Image (cartoon, rainbow, N blue to C red; front, side, top):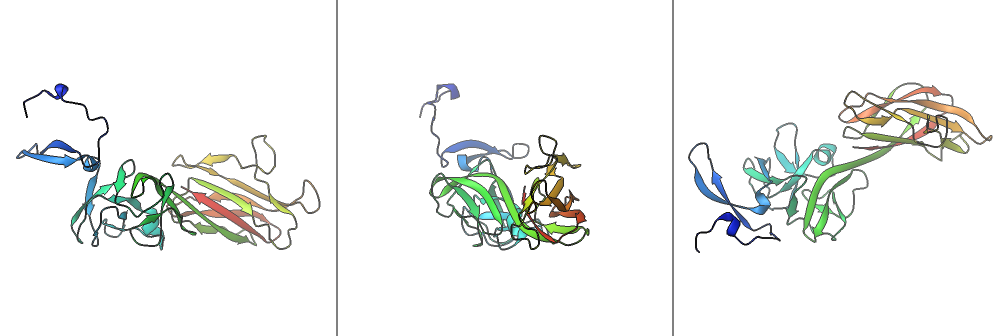
Length: 271
């Protein structure tokens, strides 16, 4: 084709992931002419810890070796250390291209367009259904086999029996940015128990989320929790209260400063 200036070329208004761009490899050393697909512009490379035989495999970084492995909701690390999807294939110890959050991953496990993609317990795959224990939303389907990868959203919940004022360490598997607390409606001996987190936006007790505080990382969390027995009428009797402290990379401490009646606290943490 005839030589043209870039400004004279016809504009590509609807580029496909397979469209090609011109690239110069090793410009600071021995420059070579190369091509790159649009899909690979925003990828980066790491070393595979195992054989990754398919593009579109969900991956996580294993802390013990710094390599990428197939993600799975069967364990905390393989869920909450999610890094993206394979944009190439690789044998164990080989280099693999990764599509991180903010890019489009192709050839992923089939799903419904417009719905979220979640990690599941089948290694390296995603689906439209979140895991019942380790909720990990990692993207949204834009075709039946491609997703817009997003920063992962993790949710984990559990419960803790409060019988004394000893601090109880809670494990969620990631550093929580938000923690919500309520009381089990089936707590024995606490008829009509309700959560009254305070202070609320009006500065008094009530069934509102607590005003939180920021830790040293600038992460907001609900500091105070307060449980009352309302079976005898309003305002009720305080049966347990405390604070959330000591946020870590894998959880937090549930401190009870009052525990006059055994109660079951239910918590939900989100990153």
